[in-house]
Image (tube, rainbow, N blue to C red):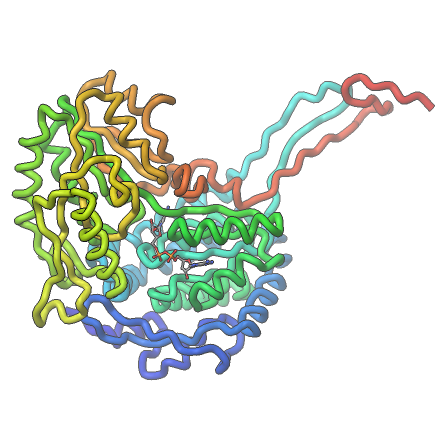
Length: 512
Ligand code: NAD
């Protein structure tokens, strides 16, 4: 289907020489251990990068600190121009980078290309934003005074990302952080180091062509320990971390202990409420794509369907029929709907969740299992499955990063909203209804408690224009569009006296 060696070559990754990609931007190292990237598509090693040891990490952060004053002095619209050029470079590399995302992570080629498109979109957004980092002007209570606020860059922004969106999540953070005047240090997932190396090569070229220091964009490769080091590093003004709730709790505590800033984008447990007034022709593909797309490994994957009792049986029947048509296999083959899980650990987690669900009384109406045979040699291909459950089961309140869908029945909308909200996570949610009252109730203050609430579209597949993120154990952070940029800057309130007097606020008198 593809020539991976040629793709790696065009993306400046030399697979014959694992030591080449050192995982540090500046200077090479022999100190760190090698991380070999294994494709879940066929179980083959693709290439290796070298982990950043403590000394490498320190050198990289020092380079970022050095680059910050240079970058900060560049007017924001000129920083936007660099991000625009990065977007252009991504357009040129879209096919190769999208293919590598698909091969290294296991999502479909369409989704791999979609991820790169999302990077391009956020570059366009950030370029426009670079002329719109607006502050407010306030009315001063004192005569001859002017008050306003402005936004300044923070410094070094650390980005910790998850395997499932190996490149898009970085770009949401980096593109916005850059136009805001920050420099970035990225620690990607140790499960997807090559796509990160490719992105670094692309941005490094753009920076070099503009005679700017590469320290504006830094990459350090490594696992949890390196993430912990970054979270605890006083030189990192903001840590934006995407991943599991377990990781987020650790990062939050570490960053808070040094009074740093953090943006947390953690796990979801997303539901679609399908009411008696739903258009089932829309609800069906929304539910199926949401549950099995990216093999259930999106933070916004649909994990729960809360279905009105009057349409429950009919919808269940259609769902089972649709699942029978799913083609599982190599994600680079466009005929397949479902690719592999990221690795065998994920398969173990999937099997354990199925077992727990059965133990807690869940009834599988579409059975799970691991696919066997030559086409599934990586051992990472699993059957998307469906269980009928009760909402209070522990497993139903847990995010399992795999294609397991839970069905629940409800009678009143109040009950449906209660079930939807009664999980620890609060990322994405949706209602399928053509009834205005139901839709508005779901979107009201007493409706969904999630960061994302949709009507007549599913839970997964957000656009970059809105702020992305969720509540409760999802971490409360917001990234990407709207005014999410404000989290990447520090606000300064300025009061200027252009009178000949010095009046105090609140009318306080202090006569000398
Ligand atoms: P993970 O938590 O295992 O790893 C995520 C990243 O954190 C990796 O780079 C990892 O090396 C690092 N890390 C792990 N423990 C750490 C620690 N204690 N301190 C610092 N860094 C640490 O997650 P994963 O398996 O790669 O990704 C799946 C999870 O990510 C799911 O829970 C999914 O919902 C979540 N996710 C959330 C969003 C969102 O925007 N809300 C987006 C994508 C993924």
